[in-house]
Length: 311
Length: 321
Image (cartoon, rainbow over all chains, first blue to last red; front, side, top):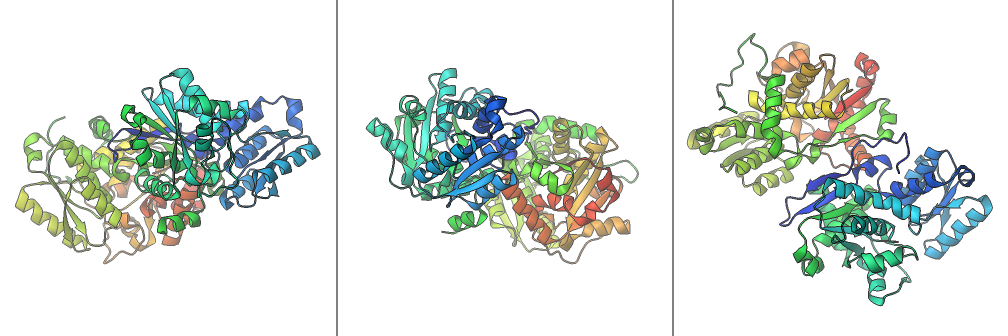
């Protein structure tokens, strides 16, 4: 799982959110926040990279990512001692690009569309022979992300519902497979931004829907489902709660002021979903008692945060 | 646990107002009311500091700060007769909320004297925990006299923010018990200093467990009364304070001073710019929202003053509250 020599100084910290009227337990993936400048992505990246044999690994790894996966791949590659080629879309947050540089990854810029990210990565792969570490549509990545759920259920075995941010579906696939593998009655809900609600549309349509464009402050949640993540989302995710950007910013503010934790918009969306009317009016809400929320990442540019909070 | 003896006097030459035993007793008393907070560390920050830093994150504590430790130890050590009339205190912030919360948990009234310039979020916390707010002027004299008046009118027990043996022995020292359980090989601890309650408890606990642990205070330049006191060999109070670290404006008391005088190895003084830089680093690297008073330990660890000291050369694993 996590490679040797990487020290986890605190496992997931669970805080009872006293302010709410129902029991909400927030999983702050603190070990990953400390480990890899800010997100759970190191789990999947290190699982993938350390599962490679030496021959595969020798030519290095390549990926395309709007942020946290990029840094995670750079860090895991550095720990393994192999090169990392990171394709980053032009609109990625500065702090996330900075993380890649700090971990020694080589940055290759692409346009903001998914097609450009994918074709640029493919080109790099052809030129270098590097292995593609997909941000989410890969069994090792999914399995790595799922470890956050193993920890959550060890720490709070009586969790009955888990709310997870959704983008490409890697995290929620891992969590859903882990959760229902341990306790099939656990409900797994996705939290998605209104301006990137492709997963909600996909579930409604019964097939993968991709959007022509996305528009949300949650920069980490702009990807679409893949052929490995879609079946899990289709079958094991009980519902998708869609929230708008204002609700996300309010949730960030609450995390900051009440939990004292710096989360990025994509990381606060689970709380936004838990507080939403849509959730409170659902049947799941009535049946839930102990809700785990994956607070997935903490990388947000201070200026962006300040401007959001000032609006 | 027995009722409190409330004379609050520190008899000369009879040892300090707390010890490792009273701190362990406190740990048992307050356990139902406080979080055991996590330790965070960062390889990036360690690279900048040149040492291994371990952050004991009391910003995640109930009511947002370590103060609940001392407040709950005081309030839950009262017998029912003492507790019935409620509790009163004066505080620029976090102690106020802590007393309000602990009183609410005990089911007794809390009268909280707050100076006019206290941060809005700290006043809000008091309201949320059901404390009754009584405003005073910003000077220490006004805070103290207003609290005394409330005490006379209501019969409530005064829960001092720091100069009280239960406050410092208990809660505050328990943070050090946890720190050393979590990271036993700590050799140095840096603690923010205001009235001295936290650092007294930490120093008594630390040196009670391992006398070779060094304890250093971190103080704002605009409120450097502790540094001046140690240099002068007696309590120095300043005519005014001027720092962004709103939680660090109090002066030493007669119970905290002997501990600071004898068991705190040095005081590192930092200016407000360094404090703000440290806050930014906490936010961006540790992802933790800390107040200025909470970030000052990191500011001290990164300061030139610290790096040029002999302690720095001997330290390897530094705990920062």
